[in-house]
Amino acid sequence: MRPISIASLQEVIKNLEYIENNDINLISIRDYDHSPFYTMIDNGDVKNLLVIQFDDLVEDLPKEYQRQEKPPSESDIVKILEWAKLKMAENDKPFIVHCSAGVSRSSAVAILVNYLQDPEHALKVINPLLHSPNEKVLELGEKILGTNTIKQPTKDLLKKHDDAWMKSWDNVRRKE
Image (cartoon, rainbow, N blue to C red; front, side, top):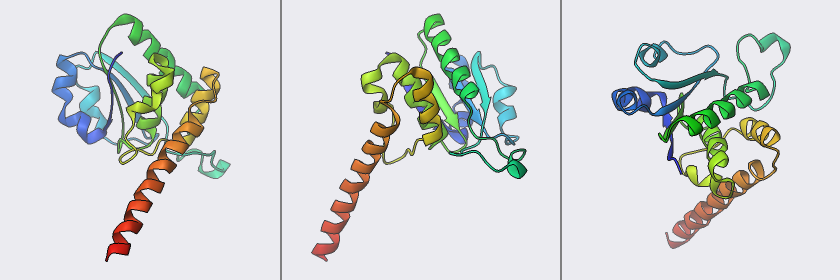
């Protein structure tokens, strides 16, 4: 099974030479109106690069805002999953999935890519302390993959973690 890492734009730029030298499969999720910092990736020598653009939204915007921001679409997720399948067939290199912060869009896409490799352990790619997967991306992924075993289990995992954290916090407060 290929490792899948979740990263921010800053982490990818910091490790760009490593990514280039090791032909890492890089999924670059960019805001629709994206940062000029992406040119560092685009002008580099990343051989296995997929660029996709959508904003970190969970629902469609009213018409007057749709030019400014773009929610993830079914075609975006199909493109990502097809590219990931192709790379899995072509090489044995790990994947890095990144977005601006490395929290929401990238973690959701990483779950979907990991699902292609190991459906039962797809969620193991995220850390509930760091990640909050975009629910729209998960919903679209479930539709495309023909499953209902991604979005709700992800929400359940995050809730379980949050509940455990709140319980430990309550215990600390009681001791004070």
